[in-house]
Each structure stands twice: as structure tokens, then as C-alpha cells.
Length: 295
Image 1 (tube, rainbow, N blue to C red):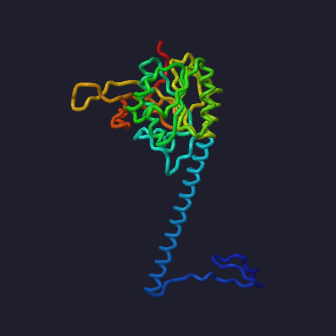
Image 2 (image 1 turned 180 degrees about the vertical axis):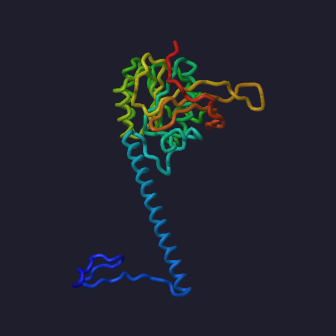
Image 3 (image 1 turned 45 degrees about the vertical axis):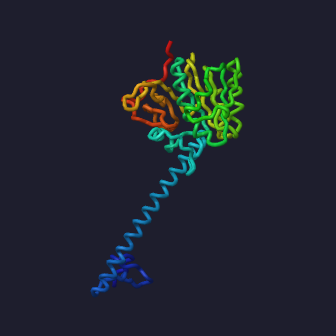
């Protein structure tokens, strides 16, 4: 009596009651050997191309997710025509290496000297934003700014609309309403106190209009968390004279980026020369402590 047939026999597969051995290809001559080598090489290239496509797909997905998150957080999407603010290496501190437009920036000042330095640096930022035909609204308590001095930063004063109000709550209201206007290049507000709720209202306004807002906060009593995208502190430095010649040099600041959402805070030495920013070098020490009020 014969034993029952086995269902699996090595590399054979069952076909009815018969078994069939899987055919194997063995090169019989040089031409077949070359064909087999080329086939294996083409197969390897196809696998590598597929792996690269998968890696590119993952990179594109991550880049798109990052753009979506930044847009939800109020950042103006970067594009091929993104505004160049002339900040050089400082751009590496910003998300997507692009100065955040359509957002709120606050400048912290502790005294009149820092206020003057912050105003000068801010004027340099306004020049590329204003372009050829845009205007800026500047809301303040009193006329502490000498408008003709804006010529030094490439700004014609008649394109800056100054609005003077007595109460700080009126300044905040005017700034919020102006930020809803997309026809303005920027809105500047001079105030001291700002809570999270008020800053959130300002940020929501610029997310719709894409107008950039700057707040010059002079000696605030309480430094609270705000919804502002960036927090700056500008300090004046001695001017650098050309060829050791006597006289007054070009404006020069220590620029500290204390806070930047999805970015990297840092400190730089910046000079304004030939109607442009010139980043001389990063400051020796990184930003270690937040702004503190100076009595």
C-alpha cells in the first residue's frame, strides 16, 4: 500500500494529484548572463527611485503641515514674492527664514534712550513695507517723534499719518480698528500696558487684513504673556566711524529678539548705513533672560 501524497514537497506546489516544480532560470551563455545582470541593476534602480519618491512625499507632507500650522497661528504664508526686510542673517531666526508679516510685533523699552533706538530700528523696517505707494498710521499720545528725521531711513514723512490721542484705551481701540484695513502698509501704536485678551484681538485683526502691526511699549508696569508673534528689545550702541574720521557716525543698535513663535531668539549688532540694515556680527552672549523693567 502506497503512502498518501504530501501536500508540500520542498519548492513544489500541489496541482490536483500531481506536483509541479517551479522553473528556475540559469544563464546558459554570456549574453544571458549580461541580460540577467542588467535586469538586476534595473530592478535595483527602480527600488531606489521608489524609495526617493517616498522620502520626497514625506518631506512634502511635513512642509505642508508646517505651513498649515503657521497659517493657523497667524503667519502670512511665505511665497516666492515674500517681502525682503533686508535683515540678512537675522532672517534665520524667523519661521521659514522669513520676517513674519501680517502679525503683531512688540518692542519693549525701559527709558527714552531705548525708545529712540526702537523707533529708529522700526523706521528701517517700515521702508520696505511702504514700497512706492502705501501709507502708515502712527498712533501715539504726544508728538515725541521729529517727522523730518524719517528721511534718514528713506521714508517721506507725508506718507506717515500721525494720530494723537490722550488716553491709552483710545490708542488701543484706534490701533485695533486700523489693523483691520488692508490698505495700510503697517500700523504703529505707542502704549504701555497690554494684556493677553487685547493682544489676541489685535492678532485676529491682522490675520484677516494681512497688515503688520508694531507696538512700542514704553516702561510697562506688568509684563504679561501676550499673543504677539515677536517681542524685541533694541538698545543704542556707539556709532562706528568710517576711517576714524571725526563726527557723528551711522545709527547702530544691539537688536535682541526676545521671543519669536516657532523661531529662534537671538541677539545681533545692526547698523543702518546707505539706507539699509547691515548686520555686523552676532552679539557675544545669547539672550538668557527676558525683559525686565528698569526703575
